[in-house]
Amino acid sequence: MRKKVVALIPSRLESKRLPGKALLEIDGYPIIVHTAKRAMLSKFIDKVYVCTDSNEIIKACKNYDIPTIKTKKNFQNGTERIASVANRFRNYLIVDVQGDEPLTNPKTIDKVVNFHLKNKYKPEIVIPTRVMSHDSSETNVRVLSSKTNRIMYLSRAKIPFNYKNLSSFVDKHVSVITFSYSGLMKYKKLKPSTLEMIEDIELLRALENDMRVFSYKIKEKSFSVDINDDYLKAKIAMSNDPYRKKY
Image (cartoon, rainbow, N blue to C red; front, side):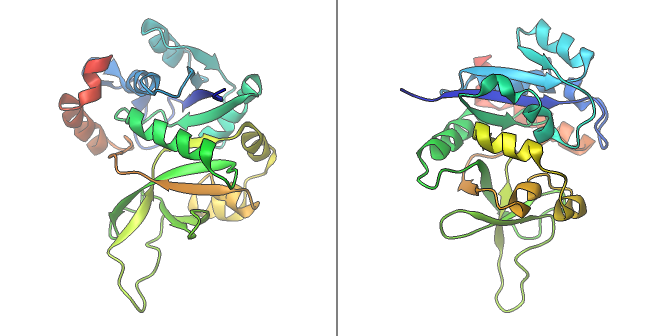
């Protein structure tokens, strides 16, 4: 019997770099609605919920028949937000789909879920990665993994450092993350960690506490809407996106 899978989409209005971005419209739909609708296209996901403290986001989701869960307000990050409501999904694999990814590819979700469920090392967390040029923006999170795909470090710095040999490409963190229920509950109990606070990367908390965090390479394109330039690019990309026609 296949394990049930739920997508929990953390969302808030108080974005630092692009306030109110969850409700910005692209091709007639708010960004958060695009994200949820595309998660619903996944072959593996049984349920989808937007998790938010915003009544405005909840209202927008209801207009498009998207289930929501009202959360508290004060969380350090999106992982803490979904962990706060995860106790109702004890028997599920939990997929954290970031709310600012309106071009999320359902195939990416399917591949990461499948990798997590079949991985012999029993991951607590799986992070998909995509190859990018080494000199890309510092907003990107770079991922260093072992030969068994266990993640060794996450950083916004240009790692590995080109000291003896040159590296033209590195792996970028993609914002569709799978958690075992027990793994998410373990994260929920941990305090913010030293490296997490320095780098502002929430899953460093898991690495610093020796959780089993693995990577999985994907080929599908992905980018989040962080600033206004991203929003403009997303508008253009959406006009040619094949999944837009499916919802």
